[in-house]
Structures are given as C-alpha cells and as structure tokens.
Image (cartoon, rainbow, N blue to C red):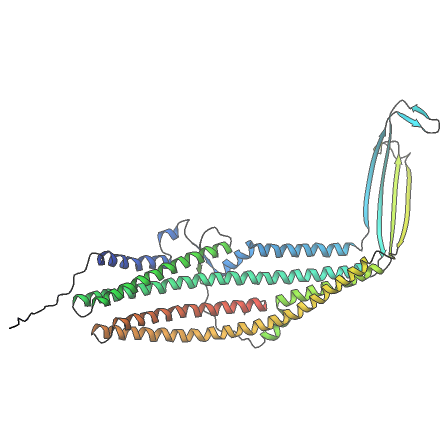
Amino acid sequence: MKRSRQYTWAPPRLSAWWIPALACVWAVPAAAQQDATGDSAAAATDTGPVRLTLEQAIKAAIDVQPAMIQAQGDRRNASAGERTAFGAFLPTASVSATRNQASANRFNAATNQIVSSGASSKSYSGGVALDLTLFDGPRRFASRRAAGATSDAADAGFTSQRFQVTLQTTQLFYNTLADEELVDVATAQVARATRQFQISVQKLHAGQATRSDSLRARVDLGNARLALLQAQANLATARSNLGRQVGIDRPVRAVLDSTFPEPPDTTALRAEVVRSAPLVMQVEAQARVASAKVVVAQAQYWPTLSATFANGVSGFDAPWTTFNNYVNNWSMKVTLTLPLFDGFTREQAQVNARVARDVADAQAADARRQVDAQLTQQLAALETAHAQIDIARENVASATEDLRVLQERYRVGASTILDILTSQANLTQAETNVVQARFTYLIARAQIETLVGHPL
C-alpha cells in the first residue's frame, strides 16, 4: 500500500538582495523629481544652472557667437570698401617738409678742389601735392557699384547669419526643454515600474503570482532606472550645450516664457520667400558684385587721364624765423596713359570676371530654387508635427486607460505580467512621442522663420 504525501505550499521568503533593491528604487524617483524641477539646493548656488528665457538666450547668443562677430566684421569691411570707392573720385593730397644739413667741407667739381665754408650749411624745403584722376573710363563707377553690392551682400549675410544663430539657439533651447520633459517621463516610468514590482512581490507572498512575475518586474524596473539615468545625462549635456551657445560657462536651464503657438497662415509665404529670403538676397547681391567686376575688368582697355599739381618752397633760413628769402617752385602735370599690350593680362582678368559672374548667376538661381524646396519641406514638417501632437495625446490617453484596466485584471489574476509590462512600455513610448512631437513642431516653425527672414 502506497502512502500518500501531502504537500503544502508556502510562499518563498524575500531574499536579502530584495531589501536594498526596494530602498534604491524608492529613492530614485524622489531624486529624479528634484533634479527635473530644478528646486534642489545646488540650483540656487553659483554652480547651479542659469535660468534663461528663449528671448534672453537668443540675445546673448547673437552677442557672443563668432559667426555673428564675423558677419558684423564683414559689414564694417564692406562699409569701408564703399568709402574707398567713393574716395577714388577725390584728389589725393600729400605734404612734405625737409631739413638738410651739410658739412663745412665740400668738393668743387669745377676746380677739383675741396672748399671749406667754415660752417656747415643748412637748407629747408616744404611742399604740397595734389593728384586727381580725371578719366579712367567706367572703372571707378563700376567699382562703386561693386562696393555697393558688396555692402548689400554683407547686410543680407548679417541678417541670414542672425537667423541662423537664432535657429541654432532655438533648437538647443527646445532640446533642453524636451530633455527636461523626458526626464519627467522617465521618472514616471520608474514610479510605475516600482509600483508594479511591489505589487508582484505582494502577489508572490500571497501565492497569487509566480517568482517569474517578480523577476520580470524587477528587470523592467532596472531598465526604467537606466532610462532615467540616460535622460538625466542627456539633460545635463543639453544644458551645457545651451550654456556654450549663449556664452555662459555654466549649464543653462531653459524657461519657457510663451504659450504654445498655433500653426501660421502660410498662404503668401511661398511668393514672399523667393523675393525676400535672406539667403536669396545675399546671393543676388553677390551676383551684382560679380557683374560689376566684369565692367571693372573691361575698363582696363580705356585710357587714364590724370593731373598732378605740386607747389613747394625752399631756402636757407629756418622757417620759424622768416620766409622772405624762400624760393617758390610749383608744377602742373597732366598725364594720359593708354596701355597697348600687357601680355594678355587684361584678357585673363576679363575671362576670370565673366566666369565668376556666370557662377554667381547660377548660384543665385539655384538659391531661389533651394529656398522654394526647403519651404515646401518645412511646411510639410510643420503640418505633420502639428497633426502628430493630437495623435500622440490621444495615444497617451488610450495607453493610460489600457494600463489601468490591465492592472485591475492583474490584481484579480485575469492578465499576465507580460501584458502589464507591454502596456507600461506603450504608455512610456506614447508620452515620449508627445514630447518629441511638440518640440518637433516648434523647431519646424523656427526653421521656417529662418528661411523667410522674419517671425511668423
């Protein structure tokens, strides 16, 4: 006769490693929340992040970015070039003064003897000279047009660079805000994973779940903590990059100072962008510069007529004593110069100028097409991102409700831990998609503003 054995099931006791694990996971959300909100004590010290709004960040970046300083230097150089081109129509003037002292002994070439005057001789002279180009063909007029076009190109380049720096700063600013919100998402993920881990342990003690459930929940919690650490590292990097952009040697915390903008009216943007986009204005001005330089090269075949007037005085008495014994010497010279042959240098200059003009014209035409294509791309990205915001928010609501239902079912044993973990992952992804869609929309809007050269 076989004896029957009766087995009684007893829930396994928590091993020692669960206790520090629980202590760790409970501590993580609080620390993460403190860092995400920026209310920690370190943020209030001199080593904490500097708080800046978008407007303040853009203003600071424009003041310190090397590209902006270079663009300002280009404008100053172009202004100096315009002044020089105008000065070519004005006469050049110079003054001179000479004091000459010779030794008492000198050689007389007529007698081949050394003559001594007993004292060293002194002489003084001074003069003024004026030189004016009367005619050089269209050279100076073309040079002045080229200088004016260069100034226009520098102004357009400055405007374009200002919007580029604005876009870069805006992207870094929004990336910082997005990373802050993603830290919040990761913190919420850790909190959900912590609660689910606690529930699985409780059900394991009650004999309503297997040890595999608690192990899977523990793995999910570990992954959530890793995601939080990565999000915090991304936030620290984004704040440091924003600090560098605005010229601050500390991390910068972005502070949103405006409401979420609605999609702009883009009906007239396409016609406007081809006409007034900073990039188009810059390359068109450069094309005008190249065209004017062709005329400058052609002007080398024209004769040059110039006049020079010089007037001078000389004498042996010091000028601060008397001018009575000074001799006046003046001269007037008119020069006509016509280059006949210079080894084909003028021809080479004309070829180079025409090639540069053709390239500049092609670049201007391509820039217009490029701006039109970029506007189409950015408008599509703007509309897509705006639509994604609503879809992502609906997904968050659905994922939240799905997780709630599955958690209730799991409590009564009607669903598995895999269903819970999948639902939690879906909710985390939906929350991440909302953050990404919102800031993708804002960055697409900033890119359109950079393209058209004014706020929408």
